[in-house]
Image (cartoon, rainbow, N blue to C red):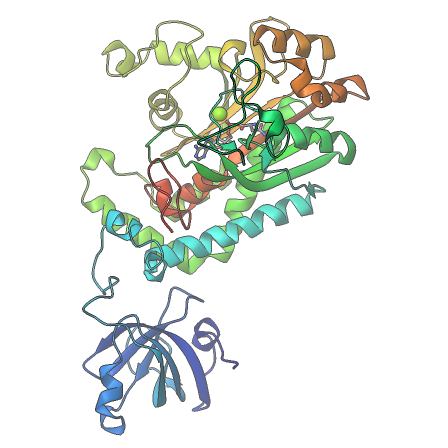
Length: 477
Ligand code: 4AD
Ligand code: MG
């Protein structure tokens, strides 16, 4: 069974030729106009039905959500807003959809309602547009790295180490929950577990990517990562996709240059290749913002905002400079921050990050040289002995979108840092080996793919830019 996509049909010159298409009914008006969509584009094709030609029983089966095959004549459209339409000659109903029970009716549904129908929400214009943009962005990621001499590296998903040292991991075990084997101290004996040790779902592929960068030069991972943090926010998922490039012979400046160029590159790609979906999403956002108070509306429409990112330099600021700005800021002085900024060393919360980006600099910001105390063990210590070569990229409406660093390549310094944090050397013996054999300056970063999709689509909640979100208390579907 071969049929032409609606996307192709819409750009075909109408010459009264016979065409066959398949799709799902968006609307069926006046027993005469079927708007059909097959997911290939945001646009529907209108099929005009002469109802006297068709059996009443057949027409009764045609309602929003039904899957149809339509054969007809492609003609220039009489209606406004479309160039071609189909004069229907034959209708085959693949499957009907009962209007009494089919939840996705042609009216406005709340995002919360649609999350409970995640298997069907993709049939709405909003979700289909988001997921097409997501797909294009994923392709753009691979294209960018391939074009720039990187190799795609698949990091393992099950690991024995906690790369971020935050202890927010999902355990992987095959031991009997009710009756686990115990060791001489009465603790669960993981030697008897599937892997003979404690294992978890990975929080980041970075440590393994470092091993590969120290041989292939420039590599990147793009895969699922897992965090068991109990964060019920519009920016956190328990399962999300992370992009992690890792480059030998790159210092922090080169790392920041790459991250900025990469983000601009993939956003340019969607601007060029997803114009129809972005136009739809821009309008959706404008409609949504009309319901909000003036102060919460953004100054730029979606496409303008994406172009702004592509065309302007990100502002690079040290953590120390940022703390000064925050300390002297109006919301800090007026005690408007939930976490007031009093001294150097404070961890930045998303309210601070968003103040810097949205109110102070009004552009993406790269913060770098953070206090060692608030960052992971693997980051390279600066000469001051207090700060590390870390960098976070902060985006308007999102907060942190990238976290990265230059890595500590000096064996002795790395060992000291691990000892201070009680990280046993035996656990990361292979990671230390990379510093023993041909060590070199190297850097990398992690970008949360869903946060990028969130930004590119103008959606408000990270649960709405991943097909089947996993969040605390939620793993349906
Ligand atoms: O800043 P993070 O924790 O950095 C790392 O994991 C490093 N190992 C990356 C590296 O250098 N290779 O996470 C990186 C990014 C964040 O900036 C954020 O965009 C995203 O991952 N992220 C999440 N996205 C969705 N839900 C969560 N729970 C996230 N946690 C982090
Ligand atoms: Mg981070």
